[in-house]
Length: 113
Image 1 (cartoon, helix red, strand yellow):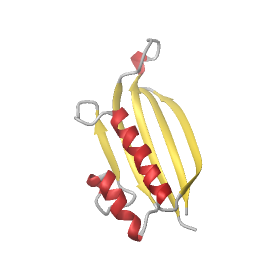
Image 2 (cartoon, one colour; image 1 turned 90 degrees about the horizontal axis):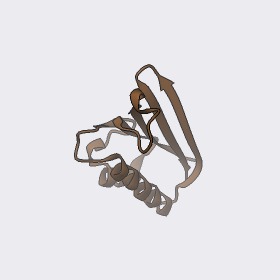
Image 3 (tube, helix red, strand yellow; image 1 turned 180 degrees about the vertical axis):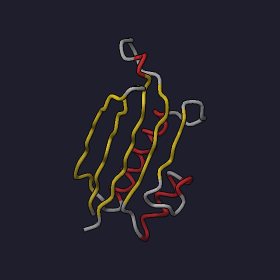
């Protein structure tokens, strides 16, 4: 049974941890692993920068035209498209880790056909 993972990770500034409201972003990444054959065109439709490169990460920075909320909407739309193609979400993991420069938050969606 084919497995696919869609990973979103993002970093926030350390100095903002005691503040109220949303934390300022440093950068975020999207990575898609495990897709083969006819499912790659869908990946290209939602994340054209990946082209045919399964497992490659897209890196975004705070000053780009694409925002993190837009990226999250794209991921949700993409997960719905995969669902229509027969993939079902079988796991969702959320994680946060603190390091010297800030906090990294990761969301991993595991899908199975």
